[in-house]
Image (cartoon, rainbow, N blue to C red; front, side):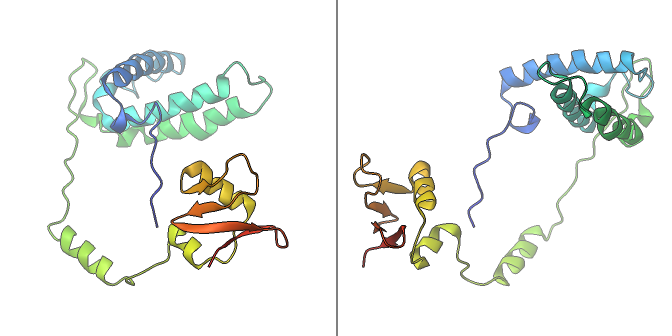
Length: 197
């Protein structure tokens, strides 16, 4: 199995560069302060919310969900706005007690000290044993073409688009293609591509 490449979005704090993080901080502060005032959550969401990493993640998710349902292209008669309240906002408010605010004071003194979770000493040994118990070879998507006797036009086009296959004559819709070093030709009878032996 090949893990697909991850393309982080604009709200994935772990992958943001300096400019993107600064921009998101400004947006999140503005939105969070609006949320605290609008829903009278000043006692629940303490002024030091930005120092609480779980709170930052929760508020970021809530902000993006809010934007999704309140954007101008939506009709105000859809159910998204109500759903945001009962599926996002109120469950979030219910989780606030677990966000580490118990040691914080309204005066701005933040008592939040995030845990530094440790990985057990035997992590590497566990992984080595777990991997050793697996079969030596599991056919993955790339090696599957080696055993395949036919591929559809759509499969071949997907491989060309991904760069895994190359068309011999790109101007010919039914040209032969090279997939992983094997030549495949279009078979008119079955309307599939087949490897050339």
